[in-house]
Length: 416
DNA sequence: GATGTGCCTGCTCT
DNA sequence: AAGAGCAGGCACA
Image (cartoon, rainbow, N blue to C red):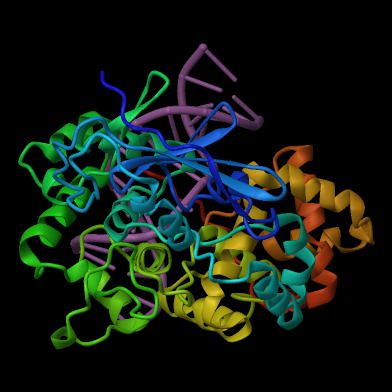
């Protein structure tokens, strides 16, 4: 295999508070980044982008493919025919600026959210440097169709299979091949659904094939991209078509629901991470837990997680966090992830206040919510996390009057 | 309109 | 050791 051109390592001054790639690349936004020997790699926009970080700089390197052929899904790769391309033509720095939305000051926003929300103020300090990544809309769409009833590790495996079997090969890192994400056309074929089932996609196989067909054949050309936030255009965006008008967040959300396998949560993931709508707040089971536990949702009226509640939770977060609410949500989401719970525990040890005091309250409040899977603390480790999570409860004054609410026994969902 | 249930798979915990 | 429970939901009745 021929080796493509590799740039030198270059660097951007960027503190770990502004961006922490070890957190951001693992927190369930993108499923394709691979860490190899302390460097992160991703095939994107027809190149392999490599990242590493120290406290002062983000270091980046680009590996271009050896040949210009076979870029069905990346027609915009900028390459000269000459053997050497001057680094001047390399747009990787712009790509990074766009991908991590570096025009925003994370510290400033965290401060803002902390001022308006005590719970955020309590949680966020251990989770600085998280940013929303601006990813390709199509990739985000398919990635999050895969995410239903699923976990990050398995979603990543599935997305890698999509790239391996249907995406263009960009190059290698060591022995590891890197494929870009396949376009809609590539996933539309006749045998795709059954092949994906064989590969372990389950019922999502149908959603992917169907959505690929819809986007590629039913929708007008450029439809998905037209839903992009005009104030936040994509990296390689064409000039917006003035005849089409400027989409709003609500319109984009609604349009996405017409696809197969796309409900409100997936639509919001695509809005937030693929279409640049910072106010989109994807409410999944974790965020619903957070909303109940820390923001007093579902305690009085509706206990089940209906569409109405979905909208109410999003609206509430938009109210307290503003036009980048999805970003703030992502910080709390990450703080709530099991895979990052070690940091929460460290935090609990630091913040040792009255944990025993409130512990009973929170477990009481959390234990009784039908309709949404509510994992009970199973290990002492988990229990520690639960205890930690009570800390901010005293700040938010969780509603402990739930005794007045009828306590039906939680019905277990029994698959026949 | 709201609510309940089935769905693929792989892993953990009992 | 086998089997229930669960994991970043959606479609359909």
